Length: 437
Image 1 (cartoon, one colour):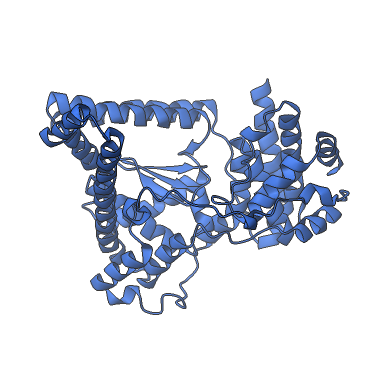
Image 2: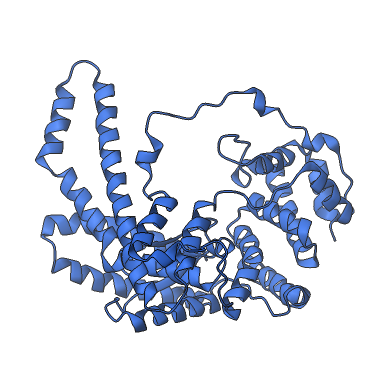
């Protein structure tokens, strides 16, 4: 019964969304709801079959000892996929998946050497990312759409991930790691380390650092290879070369928050929602007085698994000089489907975070969006999240749903939001959650 109530709750907001926001864009935006039980089972059964087929192929390529260790990795991978399907975090049969599959079909039609047995899953994950799992699955986070400007950029992203699969980068990386772990050289170093009487920890750290650097360097090389092959796929589609550079520039800047909330914004929002405002909610320690030092144990540039995006752009520009020409100003034709998914993305991500019980993130994003485009749907989400946070605070579980202030990790805007949620009294939180109508 509780499950049915939850599904009805999401569907109610979906209906409100369609009715209340069409006027904002001039076309009907689309929100993706939860999978039905039959859809979940169908997708899980599909992966059970794929796993057997994939392991059969591996068995023809690797020796028994290597095969066992490779399968151990992918066993964990498949278990994670199954859990995420069960939790409604991964989707396959949604309209967004249909759109992604159509784009992949276009790429495959012009590049017949691309594997045909790809599975494209949409993810609710709150991160600007798309990635390849190594056994034919490409996952596209819906949050990625907030970073991309147009369909060409999404297509290049798909080409990049398809290139990873074509070159079997994940599978090769696993095999390389297994080979390294079993190598005589590493065993010799480990044995010598155990016999060492002094400074054993320092030597262990040095060995760990060496291994991390090597792994990161290999990963960066593979990213550059995926860019190169991905661009070859992309170049056959008649799409804008300049948008490849824009894709990488957008990804480079994706960790910069595009909007923020100041105390004056909260005052304006709360006045609109007819909620009394208290200055004490937003009292915050002045962290500028502190000197935070990051862990310099590792050279962070050497540990990056992805090369610097500007370096990637320069490398691609050597393949085709059109990549970098007027990349900032170039305008491409709009795809109505991409525009629809792009304009729906911010609302979809608020819904996703709520469904995944990340109520702090959901509320924060809803408040930011309400600041610029106040509407009834956002008001409903704000009220729902405040209610969940009230229940969490009442049960002393607030830290499960809202990240605490972290100056070195989060923006000033988010730290201000976090400070507000932890400052507010239980009574005031309850009052807010009930007054928003």
